Image (cartoon, rainbow, N blue to C red; front, side, top):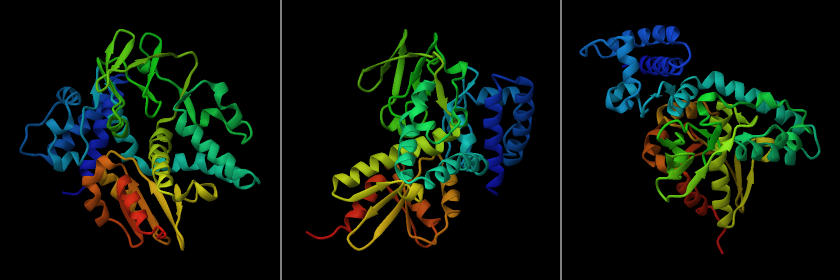
Length: 345
């Protein structure tokens, strides 16, 4: 089966889900196209009407879409007529080229401004750390970072949409600090990275109770707070979490590690006794979509790609797609691999 057809179907399903709560007429048109394409991909099954397909969007994909069609995506796309974060991440990954270019355009302007300054390396590192550590902000919090670089706040942050408010409060994932949808009874950050870090809750009144350790998460007043734009959350904040975690793990083993060296020529750089190694971190839902991205990476300089430990089962598949000079490891595997190059005592 041509992989482009399932990708197109998944894109239509995610687009339809994202429109269900805001423009039902447009959602109907999109789901009508999705239904026709699904029937072409699965002609032995009965065709679904757009209304039936909308109902299916509330059911985890793995429960009704054949694996060859859904690729490796899972989970529902709609909850209480609101697109889930899983749906939003699918849209980001399936439209990665356009969105990646948009993110890179914004970040590249910061890089260029920093490369013209004597202290640009420090300014850029502070800027990246700020985005990673501030999924939600009050505008005044950005002044010390944005004003010296002459940056526009609305290029990176946007108002928090009303469906993420609950009784005038927003509930931030403890791991990535981005808003969770607290209108559900069971609440979680739909990022697999954050779920792996136990960002799983049940709502009780105005508080969220962690389902793993019973800790309490209280909401914060909306009060003009802004959230990092979704594409920046996906392609800057999320990988930033693994970049920082990996840097700490390598430093704990005695390595000289730099984050975003030479104003972001790479995510991390490890210095060995006789060489150095550049590392890029990736946090994607779909190993298949990540593989396509890895295939596009230039191989003119040896590079390690690092993914979260919970995706270790995808390593053999991803390694098959690497060009010469590009290697893929989980975070734990990366630390073990680096130790092979460590200077002997």
